[in-house]
Length: 290
Image (cartoon, rainbow, N blue to C red; front, side, top):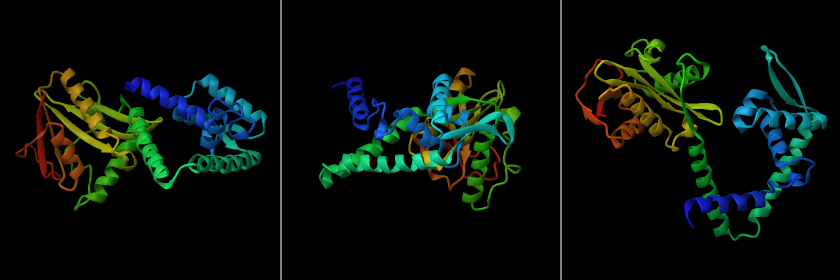
C-alpha cells in the first residue's frame, strides 16, 4: 500500500474507533468537536482566539459550537478583564461537572481499546501511538517570517535568553553579545523566523544580512518540541532567505555547552573555522557556502 493510501486507511480506522462520526460522542449529547472544545476550555478557561488558533477551526464553526455549549449551560463568554475586545470562555459549574464525566468516559474508552490486547500488543500500540503523535506534530509545525518585536517573537527571545543564562558557565547578558537588534532582523537588513505549533510559538531563528555574507542568530527551540526537527527546518528556512538575498555564505558561532546546536550545524553542512568575530560567549565558529 502506498503512503497516501496507508494514511487514508489509518484515518478511517481511527475515526471509526474513537467515534468521531457519532453525534453522541462517548454517549453524551454532543459531537466530538463540541466535546473537544470543552476539554480545551478546561477548568481555567480560554480566550476564543486561542481556541480558534489551537484547534484550527473556522470562525463560523467555532461560534456555532460555542453557542451550542452555552445553550446547554456549560459555558459562559465574557470580555477579558484586560481588554474588552477580547472574549474569554469559562466553564460553568455544570460545565466543570460535564468535563469530569467526559474525562472518566475517555479513560474508560481507552481502557476498552487496550483490554482485548495482550501485554505485548498493548506495548506495541502505545509505542506506535507515541511515534505517530510526534510525527504528526512535526508535520503541523508552521514557519513564518515575523516582526522581531511582535509578542510571539519577544516571548521566544525571552525564553532563549533565559536558557542561555542557565546553561552558559558565565551566564548570559544580551548586552555583552554581538548585537541582533530588531532593526537588524527586519527586511531588508534581516529576517526573524518563528516556528508555531497549534498557534503557539515554539522556536525561532534569525538572519542578519551583510554585504558579502549572512549571519545566523537567535536559534532556539522549546524543550518540549525538541526532536521534531524544528531546528533543522528553521535553519533551512534561514538558508533559503539568504539565497533569495543572493548571499553566498552563512556564518554562525555557538557556545561549547550547546552540543545539540553544534550537531545540527555539522549535519547541515557547516564546517568549523577559525574565529571570525569577538563574540564573548562563543567557542565554536562555523561557515557554509550556499
